[in-house]
Length: 585
Image 1 (tube, rainbow, N blue to C red):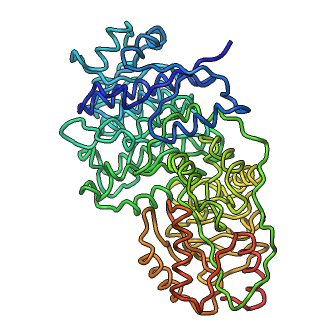
Image 2 (image 1 turned 90 degrees about the horizontal axis):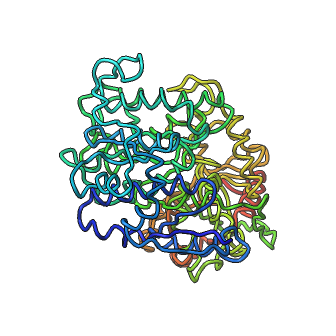
Image 3 (image 1 turned 60 degrees about the horizontal axis):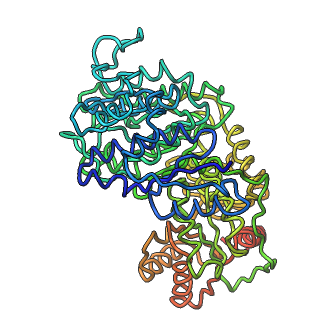
């Protein structure tokens, strides 16, 4: 008998909510929670959230792929959804959370992944999602988090003293009740239920509130949290908490997660600091900048043997990962190699593009279909830096690129390898954690993905404020041929079989102005000695067409430099040979 896939067009289903952002948030939250539970064994619910969802469903259901032949039936309204899944919802029961302590939404999401209770905002108004769900299905509250946390006395159901913060007490409670039962190699860092305003719940953008992403947290049974990485100011969403209370929770979450595997497995933190909502100077909601906070969060997690699947604001909404994650990958994929072994020409200046930033499942799943349709795909050699650990959440995307992009498209690792972290902080001494060296664990983690996807280059080793050390380079050199860095030696450096060099500059991001980008690239080229013959430029969400335009404009702006864009294998091999012969700086 054919299996049935129930589909929902999200905007169509949410249309009845009109401009009520709370109803939209709560409706989608319930749908996604049911989706995360129902999809655990095999895909059953699929959401059309953005155009890429159509693309990926077409790919997964094509002949030869694992969802081929499934019958698709649309659920057109929320009432239809409640009718169809009413028995399931009633059997699960509800985890009631409250906006007064928004962290209870994340606690309820963790509970859903472990106990199967469906998270619903407690609101007895007639038209609320809570009222509609209970009336239509008869579901009862099985976990009541409403009024449970006060930030005073003792954390409920524990012998631990209150942190002085209801927000942090909610996470303490979740740590004690659920941390021993959640996924040993996955954490989910997602904005809680607070929204964008202090005075009222308000959710203008469900994607950038991370709501579509929650099916993955639930299907994988991850611990879910949202606290600031700073301990020198109180967070915007909990200004009266004791200084450092949020950060202490982060450290406890990380340490207890580390201990689940005794640090012998890398944990992926799926998510990103919600800088656009809180914790930063965006909207005057903190004193630290967004990038500054990104780097701080990366520093902290690196000290616990973690990497990021970094769903940053802008394109952070990713629906259907509970479906995507089930796509079966081949045992091994073949990365293209150049047909020609080039000979170094000292009259030329060689260019390599780090084509990023694909260190986030959400960004990557959205843009791979977009670039596949670009008419210039395959015209130039491009080094696409898709972090291979993303294949845990979006494996179908990796299967697709290896089988459908061109022989002129080369796939290498992005930020720091198989996941975004600061590799320097995998070595002792390790601030924040005080833990022993973790670099061997990280190397095993990298090599597992590099072997499957035939990867030999790390596009960008990010060590933040830490200088990249020779020991790091020696360890990486055991399994890569080259890398660019943000904070390594300024001069091109050969260590073992690998070449390391700083990227020349960030050339541009999505919707580039070619003339301005070329002017920037040339100014940075001029910062280096003229003897430097190899330059790596980083781009962010830039199309194949715009890479072509950049190269043509770069060559036209300085013809005497004889710029040539080449593939990563010839680039790093010739750079090594030239450096060893003293022919490049």
